[in-house]
Image (cartoon, rainbow, N blue to C red; front, side, top):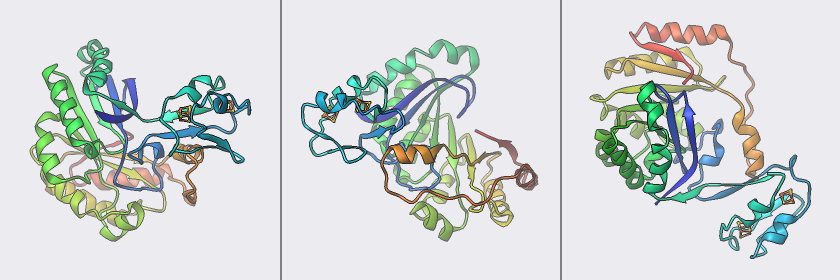
Length: 296
Ligand code: SF4
Ligand code: SF4
């Protein structure tokens, strides 16, 4: 069993060809710019759209456990909720959604197997993303092994913050690592993500014999300085990796945070990413013999 929060079919990003993306819930980092904030908690959560809600209270009437209150927005008392989804099924305006579902390996594989004909035609496969897929190592490895049994190409999108034993155990079943590096500067990494980058950089060294694409979420005013990019280019080149993807920041996470009722100060970006700056960063990384792509 593992906690999955989404399965996307026919994706054309996060790896080659047409892919199925399986999103596992839970992440050890707490990046304020995260575009999937619903992925962070390793628990089932609710999202509520105040603008879609018509105040009919059908959800309250459907709940067998009196777990829903309006005060003034909708709130779920998690201590009373058994995640039966009756409230979701009664909400015709689709204002209420549950994020996260316990699934077995077989249930996930049934979803993946639907797309096998597309993988064969396009050179695609499955990408395990999150959250952080390595946070559920046994479930992930069982899925990877099943994919390999079906001769399916596998990729994982990871922040690299995991037990090195986990990396060594799963790596033989992974064809492509999409490995995030947010900062080379340890202090900044800790300030923004809540954890040190030492383990992340050390774990990357365990993957020298694998196909790895480094991914850098480019956050304006946060990690877009040239000095840090030079250090990154040098580090990646010396490890023998050949490709870097720059992922320019987008604001998708801000609205989702509101719907999750997370009482955090929204992340304010004061700068914009100019095309000129992105091109300069690309030029700078190309000097290290790296193939650079803008976007995932
Ligand atoms: S059922 Fe949906 S629309 Fe009606 S009150 Fe509940 S959340 Fe709002
Ligand atoms: S999931 Fe079930 S128990 Fe939880 S709030 Fe909705 S109806 Fe109530």
